[in-house]
Image 1: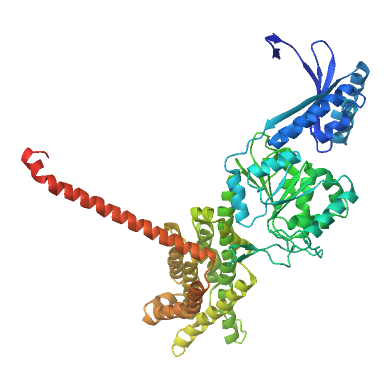
Image 2 (image 1 turned 60 degrees about the horizontal axis):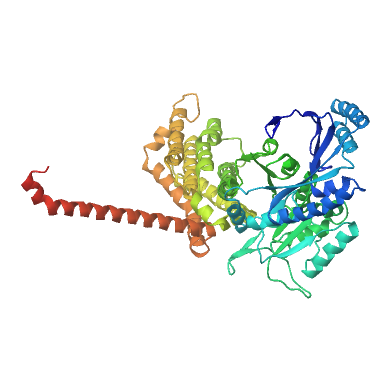
Length: 626
């Protein structure tokens, strides 16, 4: 190391890394004068307790350092306290022996290293404090604001001081000046209990019944905000405000790690849960990694809500692993969080697009495909069930085994796959512009039991139409059962394909090829199968395809089967449109407007060009300018 143009040599004898118990790290260094010192840095609450007690210098430096820490924290700086002391030869020899044994131990290695560190991390001389600016990434305030508008509750769990955490919360728009701040700083179990009880009584927070509930929200169309039902335990606003202090502003709970020690390990979790879920914002400061995981587990164990944890350092690993979905940010603090996460990203602002865009698309696709897969399999099975009833449960079959297998493997699988991957109900610009559209997932609009049973009723109707219309049309004919089976096979494939086409929101070339191509492939496969002499349905398709009745029957099946669904969708979209349908219509209107403006601009430019040519044509011709 070069200091004032003079080179010095420092030998690092050992390093004790940071852990969640000690909340500090230390290094043993041999200086050029052959003296050995231990240098320690860590959080103020873990450092002040290991300083030398009888040192007058420590008292003076401590008072100055505490004022500096308060000043740095109010400015949003991340603070660390630095201390050191000299090691005697006996202490150095004892430490080296214990450090070597602990480093090579195969059992309880972390605990032995911690005990070795505690041997030298005592009676330290305070050197001072450092304040480092932890600048927010670009787009963090906007991302947090969008997530909150989408009905997602954002909790911040940090190891910073309380003043630093509040300052960062204000800068990233997590906290606002009009919020009522509830601060819980307790030093004993009894004090924490009293603080929680007092705040619950002050803001009228009701105690939960201990049952596992979900905080799914519904939209309040009158006030244009998300409203939480009163019977749920998780809400964005207090369930009621009674007593002396009635507040209209939203609440923000701020709690430190020392209080969480008594709350999470005692019987106060229920009080914390009731108070925290009644607040719009929760900010936990000075929390250890295991406490972060404990907060996530508190929500998971008491609600049915999905939890997502996002972090960028090794101290966030336990929280990421505890949450339902873990997101790691690849930053300057290593890749431990990325390696332990389900998703990795470069910056926090990408979370906005991950949830509001891809999360919305994924929910809509999965919700619809669950219903559609139930439908396309049930309509085929029910059609065969009606045949079994008509044949008095005989062992005869109207369809070949190849047709039954190909129905799910070839005939109807390809459109399902492409629609499930490529279909988009709204563009990414609309979803980012209106974050509240994400609330469709909270309200379970894409998949719920009501939609399921409506789909099953529609499936029952379509299966009856599929079976009985051909039976009625050909009741006086002499065609065999295999010809009827060929008609049923082609009709059911065309029916489920058009059913799918009615619900596709984004038509592209691949989607057209998959949907309409499946019908062509089905007919081709039927022609090939009916050309095999050893199969019982040999040449049936050739005889049927020549008759106009065959094609008119299929057309009649499609119209009668899909007419109730078409009428239901039209009436529902006209009288009770959802937010997504309104946004889609607005999106289509905007595209038509932009197309009209582009056409008008093209016509104006073309007219101006022709006018200029006509105006200057004589001059150009006179001068020979061509």
